[in-house]
Amino acid sequence: MSTLYKVTFLNAGKIYELYARKIGAGTLWGFTEISELVFDVHDGLVVDPTEERLRDEFGNTRVLHLPMQSIVRIEEVERKGQSAIRDAASGERVVTPFPLPAKPPR
Image (cartoon, rainbow, N blue to C red; front, side, top):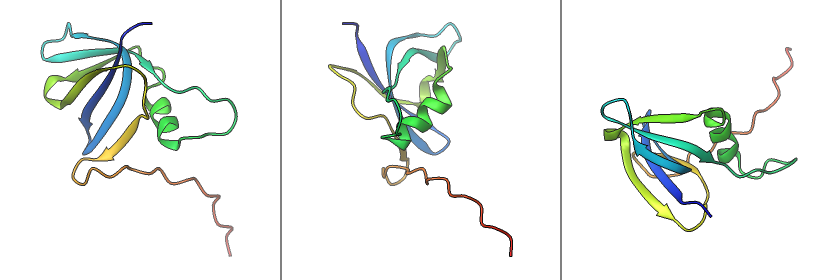
């Protein structure tokens, strides 16, 4: 089994926690390259809306170039945990509201 990393970084006032297979010094000075992002794959019903949101945002990303100062931590882990987006100030999970249908005009 290949190495798995948990990458925690700051982006737009939120703390992102993603999993990746490859981490390296970037070819762009001051950036770290994160590639082969790992997402849970579920058929049918969406189990975790945060995981779905992260997959929508980063699913087509070949290499994520993160500024070194935005990285909070990189951990080598045994297995994948739950990806997350947290509020940077409180540390609370950011919950993506379920989209509701538009209200009919009166």
